[in-house]
Image (cartoon, rainbow, N blue to C red; front, side, top):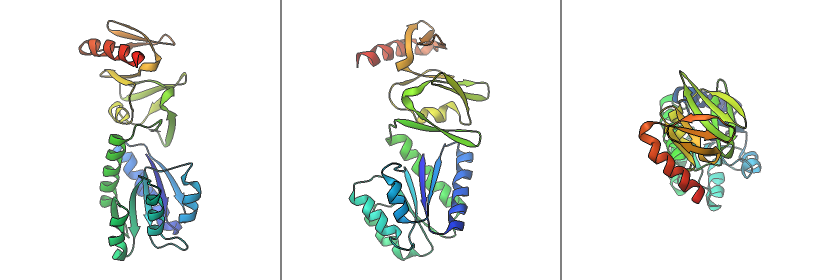
Length: 234
């Protein structure tokens, strides 16, 4: 989940960014946080990096947060906006831009976590992304979905295979599954496979283009065979 944090106060940005990373570690959600000191700086970068969530200060020099939000909404942008302010005076204007929530400074840890939980759930339910971001140790790694070959839960580890390499992820296979769109199939309790890389389906296993064998759960044999045929028909 890409989060843009826009606040002209460097200390406030650092504090909120740390809270977001703490939430990421606790929830298992992979996040990429980008910081901006002004509305103008965010707008300059917005077309190339549209965020899923915008944590937006209101009182800023130049264009303020409400003006920025109105500009984004006038372009029919669907980013989830969370206003962060030390003053409650602008709350009424938040309804005009369909703000997800208002957070008053100093930001409550619990309230921010609640808001991020809601935002993450919305992203998982409504977005069919072309790319996905997964946490690996202290890093967040971005992958084009077209390059993901399979994901495996091996012991206490989650392993992702992409582009002929494997990566150890710091999230469960169930969390990974929530971020994937059409074309991915949970063929086994411990495996998710990208159907575009499946060369053959035979009984209790799949064979990928590179020869990798993926097990198929007994209860999933029919579903897997039908999904494989339907995928290439469509």
